[in-house]
Length: 238
Image 1 (cartoon, helix red, strand yellow):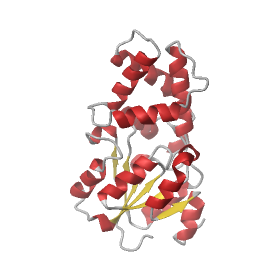
Image 2: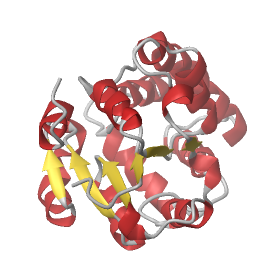
Image 3: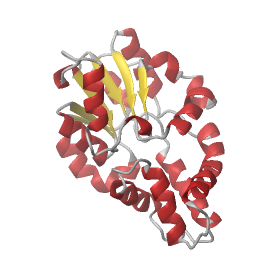
């Protein structure tokens, strides 16, 4: 799996960190703050559909917030809606989000083995800053600044996944071939982005992607349920 690889790239939300459920809770609270009712709403499917719809926009999340305002009858501007959602998310992102079990163990092992480690995430830079500087769950296990050689966020590509743009940028900036890279992703859009960039992709299980499980497995080089399984596969089980 690691033979011939020099650069290992990780998605963040849903792959390294257990955060998709947190973002679902953010959007349930967001809907309530807009005067709506989130009961019976698949907030993840709604969010994913709109981010895919607005993937070529300068700020897909701003467009998503604008859509939410229109859907739930808010008079707030898109910028005010973004600020409201950020206010709702801040506490959860700083204090609840954590690495998935053994994710930090794998990161430390790969770092010690001499791989270049990168993050390529559709997470906005403001949220990544919280992970990097304030989230003690993350910082005490594996500080992103100490582990990763570079962190790419939503602002680092015009189009979000499934566009391969962020991975193509990494190939250029790190003077690497697709064959020298390996990507860890959890979602179908992430796996498709890796496929389009021609880079081998390892799929990590996340329960919030269950509806796409067959497609994810069909499009990935390997699939693991846990990071402990990954450690075992590379002969580095703790």
